[in-house]
Amino acid sequence: MATYVKKSNILRILSIREQVLGVDVFRGFARLCDLSMISRADIYDAKKNPTGTQRDLSPKHAREAYFYVRQEEKAYWPEIFLSARDNSVWSFAPAKNENLGYLEINTDLTSQTGIWISRVDGNHRLHYADGSFDGYPAIEKVVSFSLAVDLTQEEEIKIFRDINNNQRRMNTSHLANIKMRLTDDMQLANRDPALYLANRLSKDEDSPFFDLVYYGGKKDITKFIQLNTLKSGVQYMFSQPTRLSAIEDINAQAKIVKNYFSALKRIEPLAWKEPKKYVMLRGAGLWGICFLGAEVIDRALRKGQYKVDDFVRILRSGKTWDWSNRGDFTGLSGRSGAVRIRDLVVSEFADEESVSLKDLMKEISDDS
Image 1 (cartoon, rainbow, N blue to C red):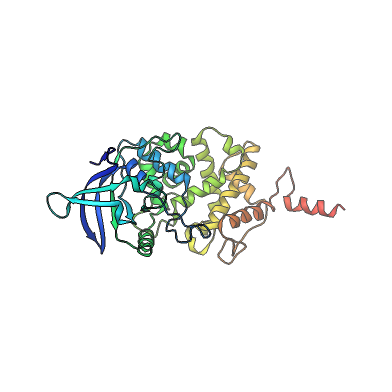
Image 2 (image 1 turned 60 degrees about the vertical axis):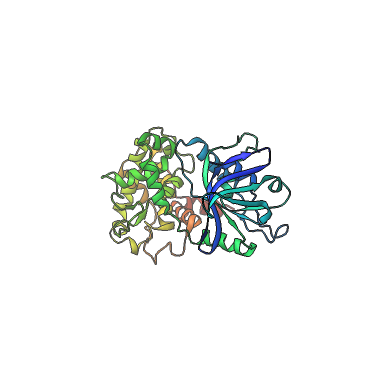
């Protein structure tokens, strides 16, 4: 346990001294507020601080880190990694042997201008922890840390790069899967309705996406739609106020959305049988049919309709589109490509009560 001796302005921490992959370090445990107090981030700025090592701080990320450790009864972080840039700021008093003893940090020095101890990895975790920001009381919970000594600034920035480059990003679908496993269904429906609906599309046996969605973990070639990609598509479908988004019963929303996708499967069955040959269920194509769904569903609900046949009727009211890889939507990508797909298809729609938007625009253009 770390003890802060105010009388002598020394932070005294029981530590182990060792060399890790060629780097001399002290490892121990200390309060977050103390580690925050003795260290600073050396933020890179092309004009004001071109020798800085750290990326810019994300206040949102820092707040999330603060409230995570403050609110969770049981939480965990990997160790915070610091680097002492001046040997006068620390001393080590061996106890039982030369490697186990007390690391002492001179807080008179660390409180002065400059960076005496830099934050190589852990800036967001430490930013609000010292209690110096209004509304953010100091966090006295204990975490593990490692303090490197005798590193040059070039070596420090190299280690910062290695730490961040060597980490493999966790699959976002796997993260979404973990979130669902830790959240009750009703809580998930309230907190993250898009994820709840994406999961329903995957798990409900009457859904055209049943058993086709990848949840992370071991690869499965039969699961060709990422859970997080489908979730994003659902978010796009609900991104504008419509009659669908106004429905308060999420189970009713799930039924309507499943019926819409079932209508698409009926119109373009080969996209489901041979998804690699079609854009409909991949990337901008998948997001495009989600954006399109908001319009199609809204048109149907306007007439009190919501069944598969109703959606098929609307989808077939315009042009017959080629959804193959070399078809009408070749080259479109990302969110902007998805919006373009929606706009192209909607412009050709027509029904008993109206003309297509494309025809209407031609009429307006000709009326000059």
